[in-house]
Length: 104
Image 1 (cartoon, one colour):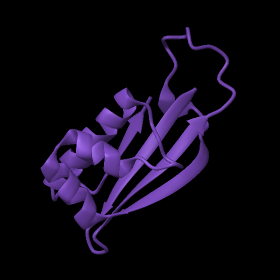
Image 2: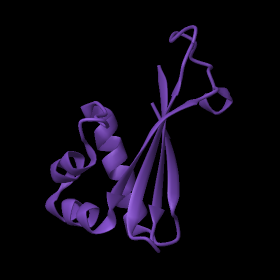
Image 3: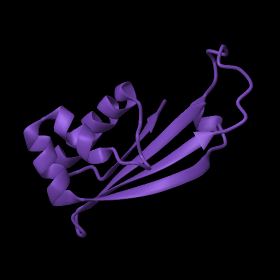
Image 4: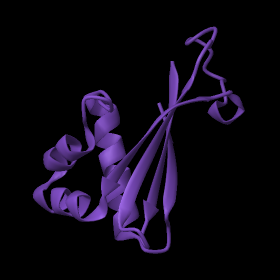
């Protein structure tokens, strides 16, 4: 299953949101030429975080940030969680960018 995560920093609200989407009904994982931008994604859920808690977790390290991002409802596997954590860290460090998209 192809997944997409839209990560948005809302600096005016001091919050971070992650929208999770999935491309359902994919026919083959063997097709190396699949363009994720042409897939039809279905919205799964939105999770919202307090910006101060995320920043504190970033200051403690990647494992702490992953623990802060994960919940009973949002629990990406470790390799995906590491990439999401890196993207969150990059977004918070770059004031000129407010959003990013990740595909898995």
